[in-house]
Image (cartoon, rainbow over all chains, first blue to last red; front, side):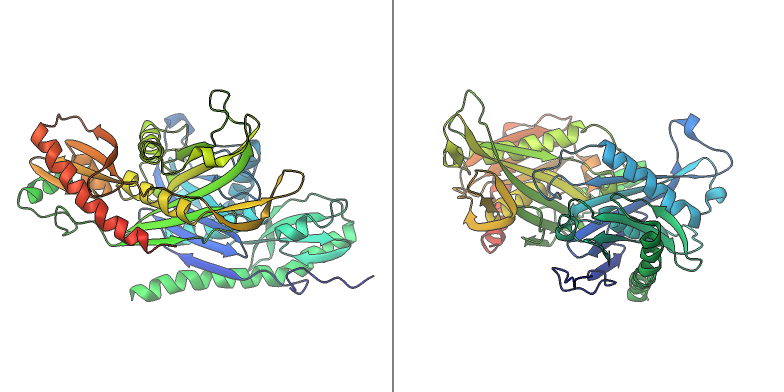
Length: 235
Length: 261
């Protein structure tokens, strides 16, 4: 296979530079900012709090409600219309499912934990950045978690597997580029988010999932560091 | 809100003391950061203390409105993100967010800060549209003043995207051409609580407000937009006092804004 150089000169298994910060929104019960390359997500957690209307309440457990949203000036091209879209609703759903396995909300019956994710700028990988920010914000809010959730995408461009595609790479290969966002619970290596668009063989999918693990573990470490940093500052 | 906090705010104000220790006419420490977002043509982050607001400018080429074929399109929008305060809910734009956007819009539009004729590319066919979106990240009151300041800072530092030969825009390339701002409109909201006038209210203080007046000015003596809010009426002497205070405070912010490039 011909040699392939990423436009950013990154190695195939190398994610973009990451910034993670906990407790950035004072009004929230928990919050975080997660930046990977030029994709940036804020997350705020409110709750557990009363859930209205009442018929949505579950007497057995609290529920998790995620809302993913791109700010109007965060898009690659023209202005993004504010308000929910089919795309943002689907991402909100898969974000919820990505985070739920590490939570146990049974101690908070009839309540809701609200997670709001807003992206001020995006350059591919926004749902993964949102999940990373949300996981830090949930921990920051003092919600009991079994582990962190880390997320990043892995893709295939012109036959080459690459971790954390940026916008330029996503558009390099209109015919064959595949993009697989993955979220993982680092201690058990269980996958909590898996989507794909594009074309990929089953062998390459296995390779991709293997290849993305170190990046995910590294992200989880940065998430934990962000939380430690906030509380060290206080002490 | 907790009735006791409300009482506390009002009682302390009578002695001239605010809940966070500020003087009645004191704005929280102001910081302005610009140009940090890669996807927006212009961006600004304004902080008053812990309160944080983002403004982003997006530009596009559009067909002008039929009644103004030579004018570019200016749009100001604001959304009270549920991310920024526990009391905001998801859903269609609230009346507060619409008022905020319209008051900021009026200040920019009526002062003719942007010469919309200069945004015309081809009469009746193609003009630049300039959309300014204002969102709180951490909402702790005073969105109109913070958002108005952020909007001007974002406009001041915005650069046009590159137009390709076929007339479409390449947003990945930016030119160094800036918008030509003719004025620096700055809104200041003066709030009346009992007989005391304060500026830069926190979200808690906003709930104790009897009446408020937003005064947008372009220099020491020229006003370009007004908005009275709150349930109580204002006397003529109240209005004079409030305008005076707003002009003084706008001068302070204008000085900070002048340093933003």
